[in-house]
Image (cartoon, rainbow, N blue to C red):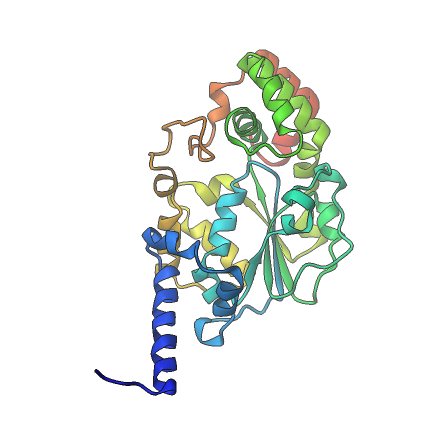
Length: 310
């Protein structure tokens, strides 16, 4: 038997630990189960090691802003991927950690922030209007982007999410009972009224001229980020944020988080009970009727034209 001294044993243990981490954070998603057993503090320590960072962004913070049902969790997954950290040096931070039960009960148009978010972070996602974003105390160097989605698709996605798949936070249990008792058409009318009162459409409107008010802000369409051939659009966002990920690595990331990989289905194959329900744009056409269209127009005005959704 070979006997090792304490220093040699420590080196072997450290090498084995690094191998396990490299395996756990590898692109192969089959190892994702292993990551669940690694304590958060140990993952944070490992990601913060200088030897793991290939490039450090010039930005001290990045803010991913949007409204609900606009691929927010998909974008968050990409921004939280270890490869994104590797080419930015910024760790992801979910602002829901600030709230009891990880739930912000305020309307989107009422969210204001007095305290800054942690520096050296990508804050993802922030469901907020432009005024709420402007209220955030920010470091000297930052970038932000707002993901816009056709509000008609937001409506349909929100309806199915609340009725079938979303976790029962806040008022969702009550709303699920309401929607279950209604026809689809009446349920969509109910949803339009709720989202208008919640401030979602107003929040979308508020961002239309944001880059004029703050040149650090970029506007991007959900439809461009999630469509086939989305690589150039994601590259533009990463360039804006100074995340210098090589194209080959970014291609691997986008493949790992493709709709087919995440859902096990091809885009267009619907599963109402899944967070990734259908994976296509323009699905609102399958659900709108004249009553829904009229009510939608009454409550959103020229929002579609403002964002060139015609």
